Structure formats: C-alpha cells, structure tokens
Amino acid sequence: MRIKVINPNTTQSMTDKIGACARAAARPGTEVVAVSPSMGPASIESHYDEALAVPGLLAEIVAGEDQGIDGYVIACFGDPGLKAARELAAAPVVGIAEAAMHMASLVGTRFSIVTTLERTVGQAWHLAETYGMARFCANVRACELPVLELEQPGSNARERILAECRRALDEDGCDVIVLGCAGMADLCDAISQALGVPVIDGVAAGVQLVDAVASLRLRTSKRGELAPPPAKPMTGLLAPFTLPDRSFRHAA
Ligand code: 2AL
Image (cartoon, rainbow, N blue to C red; front, side):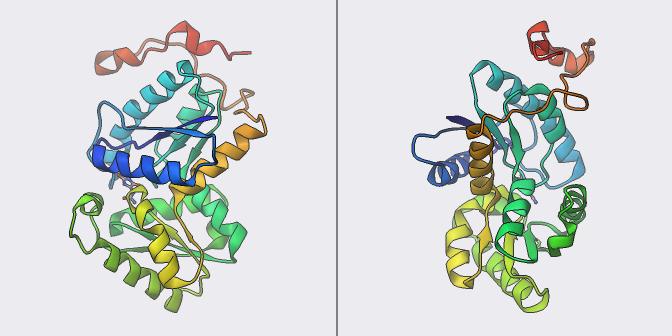
C-alpha cells in the first residue's frame, strides 16, 4: 500500500512534518510518500491561496497515477481541489477536513474545530455543511494564528491552540476537538493528553481512512460527476495542464 500525502502549500518544513505524522499514523507495511507541489502559495489561509494551490496539487495527482499510488490525502484543511482530484484519479482521494469530521462523528456526539485565522472559519463551516457534518459541528474557532507561525521554533502556537481547545470544551458543549490545520498534526498527541478527550488530526485520520478504502479495493466511481474531465486545450500559463490522452484511460 502506497499513500501519497500532498501538502498543497509549498513550505517544505511543513511537508516534512506532515510526512512524519502520516508515517506515524500509517499501518505497518503502508508506505507514505509526502510531497508539496512545485508551485503555489507558501501557506493556504484565503480563498485566493486555495485557488492558486490547486493546479500544483492536481499535477501531483496526475504524477501519482503514473507512480502506482493506491490512495491520496489532500493535507490542507480547506480540502482544496478535492473533487477535481477525484476526477483525475482512479485511486481514492480523501481530504483532511472530511476525514477528520467523519472520524470525529464516530467517537463523540459534537465536535468543535480549532483552526488558524478567523478568516478561514467560514470555509470550515462551508465544508461541514457540504459533507453533511454540520449537525455534528458545535463550533469553529480560530486562534488568530498564521499558518507559518506553526513552523517557527519557539512560537507559542501550541499554548494558544490548547487554550482555544479548552474554551471550546468549556463553552461549546462539544466532546471532541478537530484540529483545523495540517500544520497542527504534530501537536495532536500532547493536546489530546492535556484535554482528556479525543482530538482528531486530519492527516492521521486521512491516512487511515484512505488506507481502509483502498484495502477494501474501493476506487473512485467513474460513473457521472467524477468521470475523467472532458478533453480540451488549456491555454496560457495553464497549457501544461492539457491532459494527455492517457489521463482518459478510465473513460467508459
Ligand atoms: C491550512 C492547512 O491545513 N494548510 C495550510 O496551508 N492552511 N489550513 C488553515 N485552516 O489555515
């Protein structure tokens, strides 16, 4: 089993951390390949960042289909490009927000999401609604923490996230915490121990979930909406994204 974990931002230290956490969560015998795209934003904390992260992410999916990858994890809590990735890949693709929310719904009754900047709160709610998970979501809280602060040695990110998690447990009526950024993956164990409730890191949840799906020999349905995209020229800077014929091998 080979799982490709794609950090859609281009910060290598964060990709290394995500890779280490994904490997720690993976089943014995499952190989984790952690990559970031060759182009895109250094961090993803706006709709603009998210939109511009998608082309590089999709290039990693196309490459993965030639690398014999068994499953993909999109390791950013906005789940950027998830549906497009599913159109391109036959192997299953899971986003960390959808993985974390589904996992949280299995171990409690209501979860609160603790994320980075306030401006990303709306997107987290949007995803909860899209996935049918809003009924399990008690609240989405932000720490006003820029994503790249999670990469700075000596930052007080952990304390600020932990304090917000405690406020969530005190005020939201939740019994599970979902961490709202892939860059928080390495903090999950410590926060979980400090709080005494399940704390879900989407990277670990995504690796296990996609492994389960692939182990059941389930692949993304190519009937209807997630069929390979229709062939057409892409122009300008996107010319390299014109799909070669071999990308249409799954067509009915
Ligand atoms: C994220 C994330 O997971 N990676 C990134 O660059 N931004 N999420 C977030 N809520 O800020």
